[in-house]
Image (cartoon, rainbow, N blue to C red):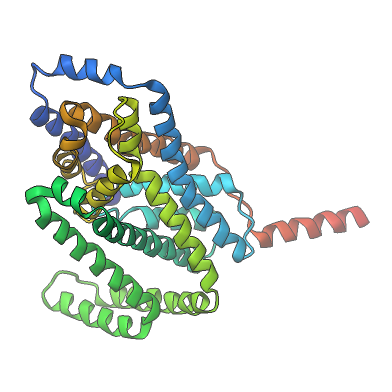
Amino acid sequence: MNKKTITYILDVAFIAFAGIMVFRIFFGNNEIGGIIEDLKRADPVWMIIGLFTIVAFVCCESWIIHYMLRIYKMKIPFLRCVCYSFIGFFYCYITPSSSGGQPMQIYYMKRDGIKIGYSTFITWVITIAFKSALVILGTFFLIFKRDHCAAALGDWRWLLILGYVLNVGLLVIMIMVFFKPLLAKKLGVRLVDLFVKIRIIKNQEKYTSKVIRICDNYAVGAEYVKKNVKVFVNVMLISILQRLLLSSIPYIVYRAYGLPRESFFTIIAIQTVIGIMVEMMPLPGAAGITEACFMVLFEGIFGHLVKPAMLLSRGISFYALLIIGGVVTLVFHIFAKRHPTPEELESKNKTAISGSEK
């Protein structure tokens, strides 16, 4: 068993431990019976709608992958792109700061003959658009739903500020690497030198070449984006839709309980704020902190139903997606045959033609 596998196992164990601890902290033994009864009160039709919504959320990313591969003349079936997305979200959810998804997507795309330069560029664009959509929607809701967000936040505003700093900081770094690769390359090499001097890393040559290769790949990608602004705009629009789907899960739970007094936009505004607060936390799946934020910020919305609402909302948006993603990843890894590359398809066609001529 290699080091990476052990790390993934430990991350999954942490998620399970965090889930148990959250349950123990928020739910006393005397409450369990009441919570179960409250869970049964939720309309199952709305729960099914929630599951379809979270699948649609994943498929938005698949849509982007399929769209961009088509631009590169790569005829990968949409269903296979859906598998790439589920694999990405599964590994994002079991690694701190969602850091494991993109490398695994790149690995499986490479297995299907997609060049690393293409897959790296696609995942980078998706990440920038997804983070940008969060910051854009968060800013929009904080302006136009200011009173509702402020009332929900209470004393937790410091976590929102921290989340903004981390998200915007990451976005600035990614955009700099993307559009100023030469500057990013210099800074990256200097950082590697610094980390070697303070003994954080040992193999200077390996990490220096990695920084240079990444920046060179993104330099090519940046030129493409500059010439095809429409592509990035389309990706951004899909990412905004994707974010809205994810943030609508608490509203679906709200409707499942037949609570009609709050508007759709108020609830997704609060959920978007929670996304800003927790997504950059260095915890697998932001487990623990997400549940705590939900309990605090949605208490005024759900009232005495906030605990079962948290379980259902988190169950759909995180645990259900984690389970589905895990199953898809396992099945895809074991049973999925490698998709032939365009070059291989062309070679097969030529062979078939030459054979028929004989």
